[in-house]
Amino acid sequence: MRRRTALQTGIAAGALALAGCTGGSDTAAVAPADAFADLYDPGPLGEERPVEGGVPIADLPPLTGELTIYLGGGEGGVYLDFLDRLEQIYPAFTARVREAPGADTANTLLNEGTASPADVFWAVDAGSIGAVTDAGLTTTLPTVITDQVPTHYHPDDAWVATSGRARAIPYNTDLIDAADIPSSVMAFPEVPAFTDAMAWAPTYGSFQAFITTMRYLEGEAATRRWLEAIIDAGVTSFADEFLLNNGIADGTASVGFANHYYAWRVREARPDAPIALAFTEGDAGALINVAGATVLRSSDRITQAERFIRHLLSTEAQEFFTVNLWDYPVLPEMDPVGDMPTIDALQPPQMPLEQLSDIQPTLELLRSTGAL
Image (cartoon, rainbow, N blue to C red; front, side):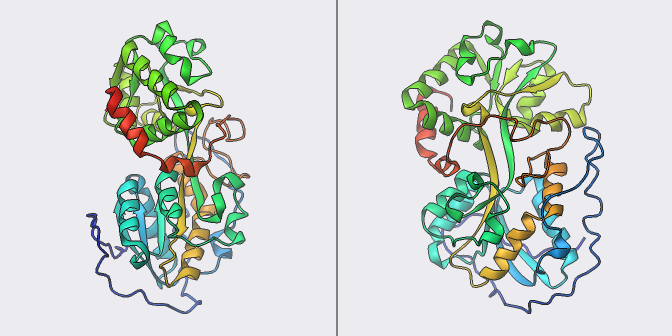
C-alpha cells in the first residue's frame, strides 16, 4: 500500500510549514477501481447484505492534486486506510494528513484562522466541527453534497455528516435483565439492580458529548443532580468506552453508558461475551452523534475539497465505514450492519448537533461533581 505524505502529528498554535498545494487537471489517471473490492463482507457479526444507496465512486468527478486534510481522530486507522485506498484509485491524488484528537485539531484551526493551510476538516464528532464552523472558518457546501443526507446532518450547510454513532446502554446479560433497563437515562440512579454496578468513561469525548446533550435538554441543575446521584449509587470509571464494554462483558460492571459500536467490537473478538445493547428514548442517552467534514474558507482548492467530501458520501465509503467501524450510514437508503436498529427506529432527542461544541461548561460540571 503506497504511503501518503504525512504531516506532523503534534499540535501547534501556529501555521504548519507546508509545501504549497498545487492545482491539477480535472482529468486524473484512474487505476482499476479494485481498492474497495473487499468492502462487502460485514464479518462474523453480520450477514450478506445488499449494497445500495449513494453514488458509486466511478460516477464521481475524479480527485487530483494535493489536499491538506486535518483529521480529528482517525478511528483507529480506519480513516487513514480509506485515504490510502483513494490514492490507489487516483494515482494523481495525494492526501496530506494531520491527525490529532478532534478537540485539539479544532483548536489548531481556531488558532490558525484564515491562515490555515487546511483544505478539509474531517472529524469524528460534531462538537469539534461545530466549533470551527461557528468561528466562520468554513465555506457553504453545495446542494450536490447536502441533499444526500437528512437536514439534521448538514446544519446551515456548513458541514455534512459522514457517519453516525448512537449512544446506547451496554449490559451484561448474565447479570442484568433487559426488563430492568428504563427507557429514560435520567432514571438510572433509582434502579436498585444498578447500585454499585454502573460504568462510565468520563474522560472520553463521547461521554462528554452525552453530558453536553443532557445539559441542553434537562438543564444544568438536573444534570448536576444526575451526576451526583450516579456517583452516590456507585459507578466504576474506565479510561475509554471500549475498556468499559470489556469490563461489562467480564462482569466488573453490569451496565453502562457508551457508543453503540464498542459492544460490537467486543463481540467480534469474543463471540460468546455476555453483552447486549439497550436504547433509551428521546433523551441524552439516545443521542446520535456524527463524524463529519467541512471545507475551510482558507483553502485555494475548494472544488477539489468538495469532490473529496462527495467521496466520503459515496456508496463505497458509506459501506466502508459501516462494515469496518459499525457506524451508522448517513444515507437514508442504507442500513446498518447486523441486527442494529435503523436510525429511523431509534428515538434520538431533538438536539441541534452544533450545540455539542459547547463543551467547556460540561467539563466544569464534571470536575465540580467529582466525575473528573
